[in-house]
Length: 416
Ligand code: FAD
Ligand code: PYC
Image 1: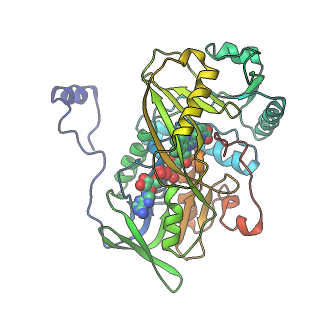
Image 2: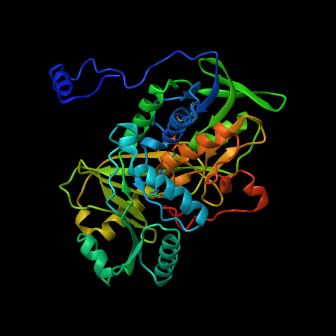
Image 3: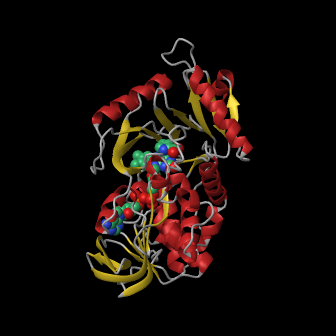
């Protein structure tokens, strides 16, 4: 792989950005692999990378029906934080946050992780009580968190409307300084390049259409490019997980719904942190190139259209204008949707299924981007050792039979 020195950058610039070396190979599928990972989003690629780099399992293919990061990985609002309420979730997400902190170095690829802090506003007495409970629980788990007064919020975010006369006055906020944002598609590219360098085959434009089994054990996947045999199949397909499960004769406790986001025209730097409000209901940050990155609620019904309904955009933008009157004349450039996979307790499913050799990592819903490195790490460990990684253990599928649910609806960035 070519090293990017200053000299090579000049050389490429002189060639008008032509003939760049490939960041990963484009191999033909082999007849079989030890492990097939279905889904070339951040979680699938991270799983492949950690399988190869930490466990020496390199006979791996990542099978992606479209292009890398074309699912939720490239569609999210890039918020990274770990301020979850329950111990199980807090430990998992905070482990992921520690991986984010060294990820650019680990992958030798700039994922532009920017720990600019994440602020969740409280607008009612009850919300402030919930914030206090969550911040205290976080601190007990060694996770950074502070409670801000209205004056402290206003100082950090001067453009925010903190008037006591507003519909939902800002009564304070929780603040996680280590949280922030990252460049979402760079995360997919960084993991892809690093996994490929370890010998993982990345097969784009290859759709899995069936999961083959014999005597209760998986034997491989049917794809749009023919059958690919595998001893282990790991489905990391976010909003399409229910479809993949059905191919194996399983039903997951998951609802798949559109969640949408928007970006504005670029503005001069004016918002240097992430602001979330579940009551007025929007979340907003400013990307490094100046666009406001905005999102809000998921559609209230299941669907696979990567658009989302107009009602939600109207609601989101009215929330932005209420919180930031100065943005009322900013034009929106683009809008899109992604299909999120939501479990009844707003927590993921990580681990094996009743079909031997068939694993799922899904159900990250509206909040899995921040989990990308941690999810890949613990899932790779689970696959390689054929037992759950300790951080993944509470998130096994059988919790829906045992009743050991981990309710994280309150910590989700999106009310649903
Ligand atoms: P994906 O990136 O969706 O990857 C799954 C891949 O599987 C896709 O590329 C898909 O094409 C592929 N696939 C599906 N079916 C098949 C098949 N049959 N054969 C082969 N390939 C298949 N999370 C946060 O933490 N912070 C946020 O700010 C945030 N904001 C969000 C905003 C929006 C609008 C959306 C939609 C989501 C948001 N999320 C956020 C959630 C986050 O994006 C996801 O939880 C996370 O990116 C899931 O990653 P993934 O790799 O599992 O899924
Ligand atoms: O989980 O932080 C989050 C989030 C923000 C927007 C969507 N999800």
